[in-house]
Length: 45
Image (tube, rainbow, N blue to C red; front, side, top):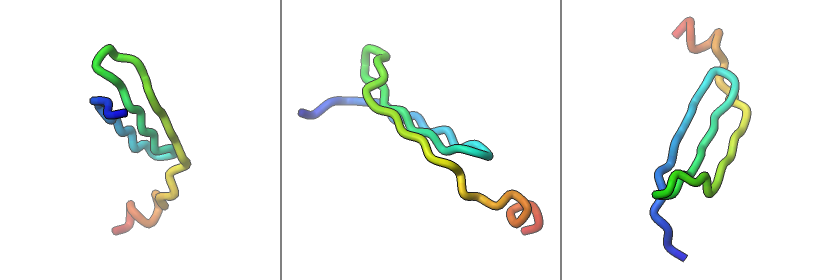
């Protein structure tokens, strides 16, 4: 089934989240995972 959605991405310091929202504003899917970034390494670059 084809469905139009908007994909919202949130990349924070500790987590990365994705949420799919349909035209009526209903959340149809969501996922999150820990952000594996190394803040100290990124800061010194």
